[in-house]
Amino acid sequence: MRIFLTGGAGYIGSVLTEYFLSKNHEVIVLDILRNGSEGVILFKQNPLYTFLNTDFNTALLPIIFKTYSPEIVIHLAAIVGDPNCAKEPELAKKTNIEGVRWVTECCNNQESIEKLFFASTCSVYGYNKKTCIESTKTNPLSLYAETKLEAEEIIRKNSRNGISFRFGTMYGWSPNMRFDLVVNLLTRMAAQQSEFSIFDGSQLRPFLHPHDLAVFFESLFEEDLSGFTGEVFNLVSENLSMLELGELIERTLPYSIMKLDSEKEDNRSYIVRCFKAHSLLG
Image 1 (cartoon, rainbow, N blue to C red):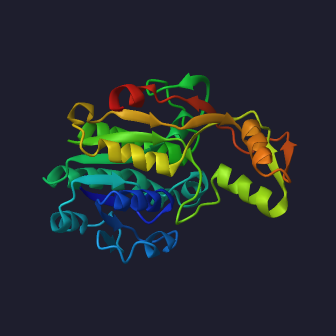
Image 2 (cartoon, rainbow, N blue to C red):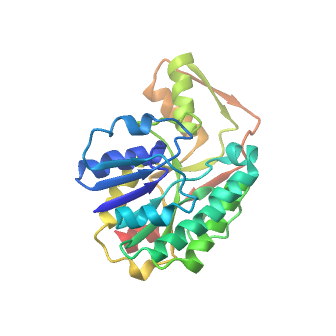
């Protein structure tokens, strides 16, 4: 298959790229390298890999689609995370909302594209005492979550072949590492400083490893998903409280010491299940 990844040189995209190439798929990555080029360097010599250093949110996208005729588009490119969106709110809205509208239109007009997978986030649930499934009322607590929720609606109303996937909080190794993600951040602190802090500890989070995501997405490439156009699916590996996460890090790195801070730095707390994806997508 010919796979097109917007934002494909980033933390998630570079893991997907590595896995798809290992399965002999052709991968075209479009990325402006806002977060560095580490997610490109490893793959440049692979004949199945093409890198395009350009923005998806321009008039060039239809020409690029016509040139490369992708079969699958995975739209990862975004202003990611609460702090980045809060810092550049207008860019966040332009990229995360209007950019999705543009990608959807271009995918609709490109006959070769069979599927569009949109990267949303479980952060749309915000704070919720109930177990969150796709029908749970959303409660976005940040501009980032608001833009992703609005983008899902664009996919639902306008796409001829798009599906939105709400990712849990990502963790683990990537060719283009992020240390603003809670598991990666705390693990690095524990490894480098021995001591790390957990704020409050009661908050609950759903987690997802990008390799698990890659395996799941690849399993869908040959499937007929026409009956799921516009649908939303949660994708989660497991749920942990921050306290449970801290204890896991302590067990993994025995010399590390967890400090519990009574203050809350982040009000989000939610458990997410992905029964819908398991039952309908396998």
